[in-house]
Length: 612
Image 1: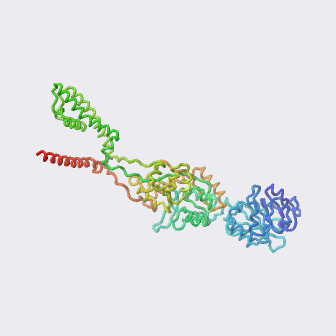
Image 2 (image 1 turned 45 degrees about the horizontal axis):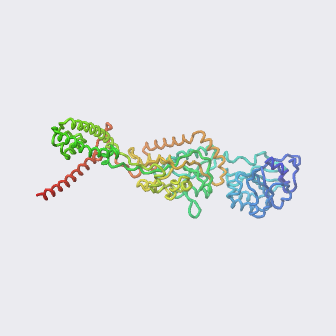
Image 3 (image 1 turned 60 degrees about the horizontal axis):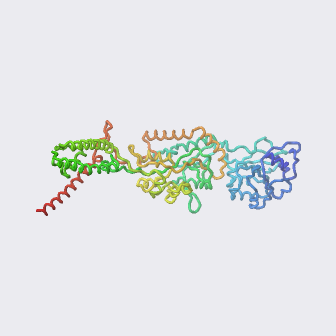
């Protein structure tokens, strides 16, 4: 019988005599036959059946006959979280614990009186009972006036455990009936879903393909949590080589998300983003790190070498040079012609427009002429023309060397606006980014949701990116690792990260929905984050991966994909010899000259034939 319900509510505990509970009210002093009873449970509501009239209660007092009667309870009261059940039949509560998952108070303290041991075990095995930390039951023994108290074990073991005995109006042991079952899981084996996701998770495999060990920042964080909470992490992969998984049309999930939704694993880790659309089927822990999300695009191939002849000058500079070349011939002709008409002794060749043009054209190529001007005015003009062309040719030849040796990169897409205007597909693994893109305030970023496409494996997207048909969306750390380890050959990357990124995401562990582990795991992750161990784990895993590959081992897919580009041949002193690829432009000019000369020759031949 509950003693003084008003005091019990305010003091967040109640004192009772199990024998008297079904017979009479206990006096407010909380003593039975001169003996002080034990504080058992905090409480706010009591769910009673026909014996409710024996109890005095100003708070919730609900008569339970069917499962629907349990819906009348205001679960998770702000006053306290205790529930006392005096039921003739346990079926309504068992059915409720298997059906209503969102209203159950998983952090409450449940006291069941006059249940059988089988019913106690059945409650702890329901969907809600498996995730409830505190369930205590009083089972009447064959001895008169004796009650056996059992509690659920949660992660400590299956079923229930006998913890105390009520005899002669008192407990025979002074024990905490609601111990902390989460700070020390006593070596319980928890199933952890994960998969290889470099550079966060690495695998080492035996020659037969079996997994020898796992390491990486996510694995080390999980091991640290397991050590501090004293449980054994049993790692396993999602079925059918699926990774995080997505929601199917029938409403179910596959991959890691499906395992957590079906309660097949306890924890999921693999660079997992905290996202709202997954929160309906699982609980995220407190984040232990964060990462930027970026776009991975193809590194555009360098411009052809023959175009290097035009690279030293900007297009406006070339137009200015062309204008100077066109104006120099007539200007030279005009000065020489005026000098000749004024009685000067200027050479006759410069008094011809075609010869003056040819003369000025040769000066632009620093070509010396046998005929020199005689008049002072013409000599001054030629002197400045020589100064102009010398500076021009020296600047061109000096800059040309650099462009012949180093390839000029083309203009590249760097912003979200440019990506939107390009119309390229935005490829990603799964659909985790789609909602974030569609909800963005940036109209260009929001427009990318129309070309977003999720894939089961990121490897399926890389050929599209290399062909220039798509960009890949992922976290910055992973993309940097991919570029340096998969798509770089002899120092030349075939992919690059665009300068403008998408958003920052928090990285956390995933737990089953309403998992009792969350409070303790959050606390431990806070310690790990504050200590700086996350960064230490990440750098240490990169060093391990580098050392492992230096020993001649391979970790599945660390090699380059698709081969590299043509490389430069460098001699011992570091000088790059000029090859046909560097100098192809001059041969193209020669061929163009041959073609043009042939056309002019044919034209002259036709003219001469007509004249004859």
